[in-house]
Length: 419
Image 1 (cartoon, rainbow, N blue to C red):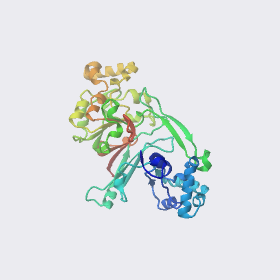
Image 2 (cartoon, helix red, strand yellow):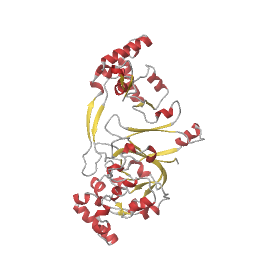
Image 3 (cartoon, rainbow, N blue to C red):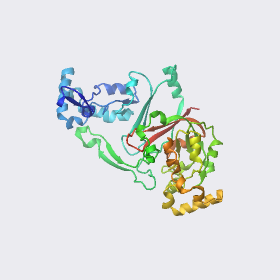
Image 4 (tube, rainbow, N blue to C red):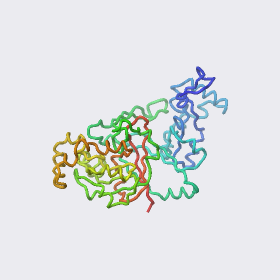
């Protein structure tokens, strides 16, 4: 993107260059003031929360640094290193601030113009990435409903318990059974670059079907919306968490009746299922990766049609897939497990697998039959789901706004009144 600027080369301002290299930055007393105020976090709508000339961009763009220093001399009558002594400033931003827990969020945008000079309840929900220094985040601001005062609204939010049902995101996290595992490559260290102005940084390569993630419409439906095309309002709303862990076992089948008899489900709800399979996840004392990935329970043949009738907004589950594993390619990859599941079905229902789940109709049923109807699902919930009782909640998925993505990692949160 560009805009008219008679002083720029060709009369056009390079917006991307300006966004990263020419944005404003804090004065020398700004971060000390933030520490004194005990601010939790500072967020900015540009490429970096520091002035770009207090980063290694100073050395990468010497001409821009010369311009910035000339402007500083004109406005403050000092050279750059006089106003920002490099050793002291580096210690402030690299040691003092991290120790104090003062975090920085960068690259904000979206509807930020609607919040100018107003108080709001802010939530920054990063992926809980265990091995790295920074992570992608969904950032939201919640405003009081009409007629409510800021004080009453903030008191109500403070009285709300937030349960984090997101699995840790790590090189140890198993991907779906035939996808590539996560790789991390560290690219920078604080101590190795630019006279102390370096950063810890890493690149990651991973499937989007890793840890707690949302399967979007386009994952199985070519005409569907990408993750980034779905409005934020879709990802949150009233719903239920229902614990069926006492009624399911290896490769068993759960039904709509199990849901209806246990919880006050209402048409249009978000539905999160607690099968108990989170107990076998990679970070659990009872970890059993094969059982977690291949032997989890799955829905009955009428489950997807029931979701449509009840107008379920979207679903989530605490195992690796919303499908029964034997209605996926795992049936072919694990014939021994399929034989066990098939016999279990015969014993319980008097039908073999292909009688109860004809392949042409039920292969990836929860994906192929529901995604075109706008009913998607999240997989691999964990963490606080262990203490989430059956009941009604306000449920939210903070999904990264990936405009080209069919699916994406997310942060999954259940809100309830604190007891």
